[in-house]
Image (cartoon, rainbow, N blue to C red; front, side, top):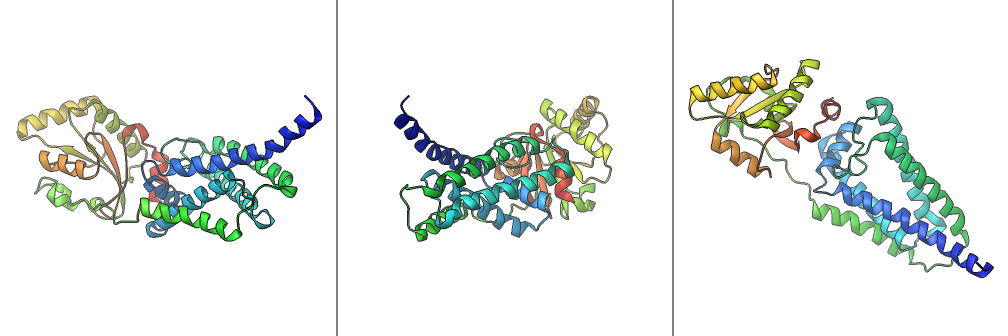
Length: 315
């Protein structure tokens, strides 16, 4: 390889590194939007302990900024006095400090939310990733001092940063959470009417079927959570059966598989049970809802159930 070829390769290397750095920002922003922003909204609220209304705004602004910075880096923009590279470095350092706090507070068996609910990443794995990106960012700050790459007007930089933020708000507008009207679903005249956790505060409410194997597995996990922390607001909602004797038999068979239910359990009208699930975007069970003041904040299956995440949220 000649010296001129070597210099040419070295000249392209910073540009390639900038594309890689920007690509990570864009990929991270996109994963936080799959299927929507709700999980990242939940992550901000539970990890930072802020109000729902504020977390909804911050989640969208944050993803928009992340997407905008990524796009600017991919198209080789560094900004006046390299503010774009400095800003991306500051974000990475801030993320890493937050992850360290999360690790010491919650351990390493939680999803840090760095890639939303699409890819679960532990705090340590994300810290390692960020350290690599920080090194790449510092390298670019040093290499790009004498860059002659094309430059956009600084006003265009701000526009390109602002547009993704607007896009996120348009794609996932802040809307009212779905409120579950229990009086339209649960069988009247039963003890559910005296359970304040259905309508007040934060609770974990599982929609289950008495004949579903996955529901039995979910109930076992919930029983463990409840037995470990009896004050944890966990509730089971079962689809009822028209025949009372048959329903009792099904419930006994269910408990024979799961052990005695440690949580309050209530029965819903069969048709209303299905209609409520469908209105919440689900066609099967088990589905476990994070509910705040009677309104659905988040939903997961038992495969994605993480007791630490829930306990962090209800603090």
